Image (cartoon, rainbow, N blue to C red; front, side, top):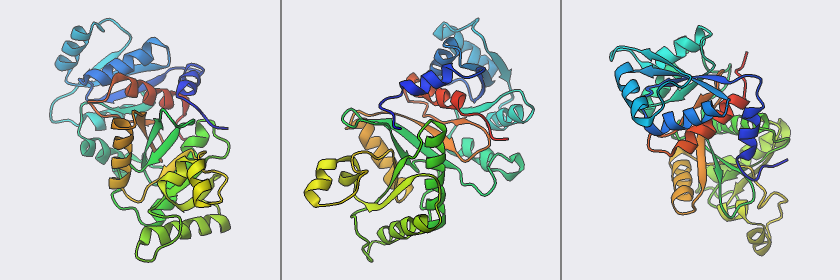
Amino acid sequence: MYKENFDFLVKNARAAIKPVRVAIAGADAENIVLGTFQAEEEGFATPTLVGSGKQIEALLKRLGLSGRRYEILDIPEDISPVQRCIDLIREGKADALMRGNTQTRDFLMPILDKKNDLIQPERLLTHINLMKLPDYGRILAISDVTIIPNPDLRQRKEIVRNMAALLRKLGYDQPNIALLALAEKPLFRVPDTVEAETIVRDHAEHPIARCNLVGPIAYDLILSKEAARLKGYDCPYCGEFDGIVTQNLMTGNLLAKALEIHGHASSFGVIEGAKIPIAITSRSDPPEKAYLSLAVCASVPPVD
């Protein structure tokens, strides 16, 4: 099973038993609030707005959102809005965490703090971008784009595991995942190609996750059956991959941004590997990204 566009996410969210109660850390972020209230209007999210009450109320008034269904939690400037949101979740007053007007590092550090016990046992926190390219007939996941700068062999296996886990939660039976590399053969002067071959070999012996894993493989072969034909590369998944695991954060970040800017791709980010659903989008992103990220949160229940 594969997905052609993001409509299935919204359909899944609307079909959820109850709206996801989302705590927004630093809720004085215009586009994130707009996307959240679109989700609230469609019935799959109920927001708690955490941060400066004065700034949040002013923003809601300016956007014409005063009087909608929400709660504002005003906190002092010296209190982390992210930690306060996590406290709400641990108290059973919220289900999911969402980044608002907070720096990426400030958002991630409380999540990674062991005292908050948010990471699944023996799991790695992974940022995954879900993308829709105009000329590619299926949704494409790309990772890691935000968290792990230079993953080692073990971490790359965990990133594969997390990507497969997310895609399976979203309804993919057996996702096709590619380990991006410079070439489709191991080159000993290019260590990540050797590493990719090792990961695929290990996966064949002891599966990392329920997925079809290929690598090393170059970008053109991942996306194009015709490129595979011309190069004589025999792989049934070329042009049908659901996910790309990149070599490092720089590659993933550049690839995602290039596809957005020059490839006119639609995309949004989520975090996998935590016990709770986590939505993470940039403050400058359009409201649609916050809306779609919340649709995933509403579709995926917290881990017991």
